[in-house]
Length: 285
Length: 195
Ligand code: SF4
Ligand code: SF4
Image (cartoon, rainbow over all chains, first blue to last red; front, side):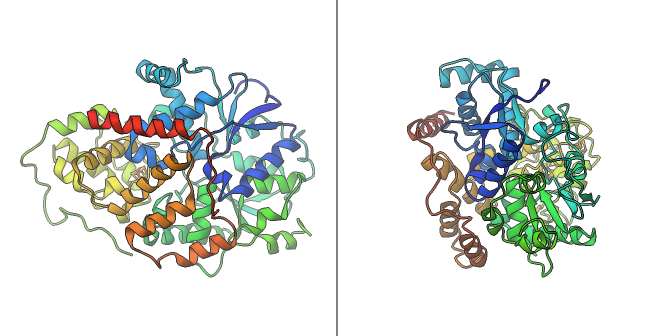
């Protein structure tokens, strides 16, 4: 995105945020509201195809991603919250732009030419565009005394055909620091969470997730912050260590910090209860 | 932890009966030119799932370079790979390893070689759920996956905890235009039959 952030964006929540990670969804909308950005949910959006479609059926992966692109109103960017939906949708859009065959197939399927100028942006792009010194709620250092390790999982990795696109390395660090948090460098910020192997091979994923949690604890973190709902879930359900630190969705901790309307319902849905920590830090009553 | 022993760890890789046909097809489908790989092992060094792979990611490419397609289609790596792009992001030759794994997996399915049936069961359940609702319904996916794998009690505690936290909804979030979604799936089945 080259220009200023428009006041209204189309919004693709994706399956996780619509269900298991509803707290991620509602805190994201709440945070955007504090920044004067209105999100309009893409009407009748469907699953982006998730890891499973491209894993076993490449054509279905295209069709499922493209259906959502075909629904996007032309006059505003499409905001995507989930990093994995973001990759699926933006890779489909890239193919429509660069591959005439893909564009022809789209046209036959959806009865119109693809909108090549549709901008698909991740939530990070909004933050990158914000003037953090002036943004609403940022002057209050709402995260003072909070020691945080940011966890990106695999969200910063992309396929080779997209490797020259913009990088967001360090973005969570920058934003959290500007809110007064004590952000710690650690070894596991880019370690994959295990995705679907968490279901199929918990024996493989549990030790990996434990290693990540151990890393957070030895870094002296009060909490972990993740920008992906699937990472959040895998870290929560697969960690079987005695000692654990809470894991926040990035949007939750942002909402807390800038004084958005926080709902207690967000935190009661966590498997690792973050409320004792938030009370200790006097961030909730 | 169970690990998958390497199939060929006791001796040199056999280079007998090199197959030319499948590597060409896989190369076309995935856009990967195998001979670009010079086995620097950057991919393998960063892959978080080596413990569950019988061949390392660069070894899969080596097998293709040597035309050992049967060995490749039978390996566990093509099923274990989650497509996290940790490898392809650092590959100095810009090789799209996840795309290669996708193509190999889909060829293995076409040939009926399923060395990790649980992974395929899971992916099938996800796609079936999308066909039914237009979105994924996690509780249903988990239950049906459990039926297929007959693993009733593994993960019961996790499931119950998620239910208690209202993370698993009983009814799905649904698309309105389900007709369109189902048509996409039936068209796809027709196209696959014609291939
Ligand atoms: S990183 Fe690339 S060049 Fe190096 S071994 Fe892996 S695929 Fe081959
Ligand atoms: S994409 Fe596959 S091979 Fe590459 S690092 Fe991830 S799991 Fe390993």
